[in-house]
Image (cartoon, rainbow, N blue to C red; front, side, top):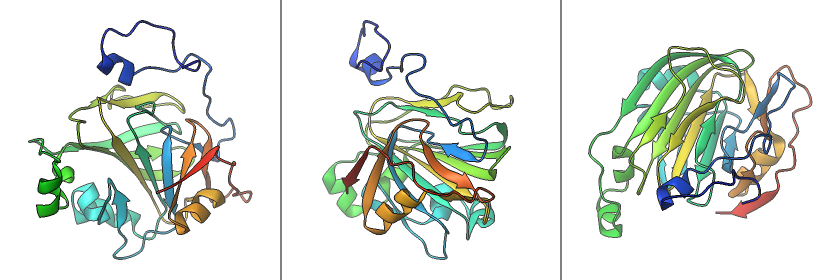
Length: 237
């Protein structure tokens, strides 16, 4: 709690959305370094192959289902992917990792389905009927990306903090999840950037890498020093 603002929380919901003290976290000053957009547990893949599935909330779903349709998924086949899983103990604010602008925004989901274990046994993708926020963005150093915020379990709301009709800067707050666990998936264009070696290595072993907000998680392809930053903790799934 030393890293967070010293305020009095009037509810658990306010505590859940607590903010860092100014200066508690920072983003890389090197333009080709991608700082982590969420303080979370990361998986990473260098290339998105045909039939690739991603383990979100204990289930695997295809990218076209995550992005909502084949048209949105098409530019990102063969490109890099980062998946950040936030648990209820984490800082639940999402930040931009580079300067740029939003090209389009899509919100998917309506009715919030129960995640009772019996319901999940009968339909294993039920949590992806809950709210998803999809932003296609153009960045200064990493090209075009798709940022997908996925609500699940008791998360019913994804609040977009930054106005989508305005450009954004590196490190600015993008959005916040209301109470519960959640996930963020970032898809990149082929050859534009690559997740750091430590995240790729842990992913191949089925291990999540716990990364602080702003720590380097990927580098642009013209950055030859594509090595991991030594994330503080590696958690086994």
